[in-house]
Image 1 (cartoon, rainbow over the protein chains, first blue to last red):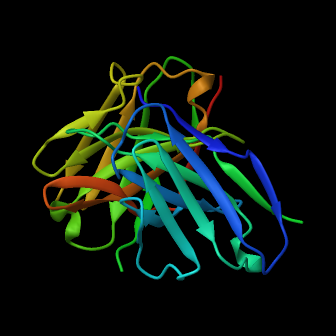
Image 2: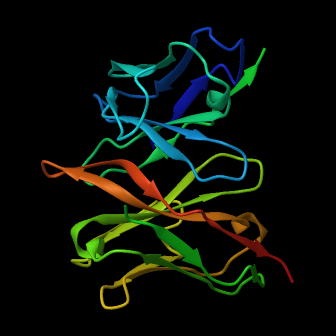
Length: 109
Length: 121
C-alpha cells in the first residue's frame, strides 16, 4: 500500500499570506495526486487533480505542483474561507487503489 | 449540477451488516464511476471502493472481504453493504463521483453530504 504523509500536521498562517502544504508518497505515483479541502461538518471538496489541474470553480490562488513522490499545494493569499483541513490523495495504478494523507489543518495565526 | 444523497440506518449493531444507499439526482449514473469513502469521528478519510454501471468494482484490500457494492440504474442508486461491523466501522460515509478521462480514473469531483453510522449495541 502506498502511504501518503502530509506536513505539517498544523499550519498557522495570517490572512493575506501564502500557505505551503506538503505531501509525500512512499513510492512514485507520477502525477496521480489530488488535493481536497474539508471544513467542519462538510464533505471534502476537490481542489486539484492530476497534481496541478484545478477543479471547476476553484480560485486561481490554489496551485498544485510536484511529481514522483513530492507534492505541494500553495495557497497564494489566504482568505478567511480557506482555513480548513486539507488532504492529499493518490490514485496510481490500473485499477487504482486510493489512499489519503492524514491531513493538514490550516489555521488562522 | 449533479447532487448525491446518502441514506441508511444511523445505528447498526455489532456483527450485523451496514447497508447504505446513494441516490444520484441526474441520469448520469451510467456514465461515471462511483466511490464510497468513510471518515471516523475526528479522523481522516478512507476509501472503501468504487463501482461502475458495467458491474466493475474495486475494493480497498483492507475491507474487501466485508464489502459489496451494487448499482441500480433505474433507481439511480448506488448501494454499499459492509458486513460483520464493529465499533471501528463507526464513521461518516460519503459517496462520490469519480473523474474518468482518457481511460484513467482520477479523484472525486462531486461528493454527497455524508451520512453518520454508529455501530453500537
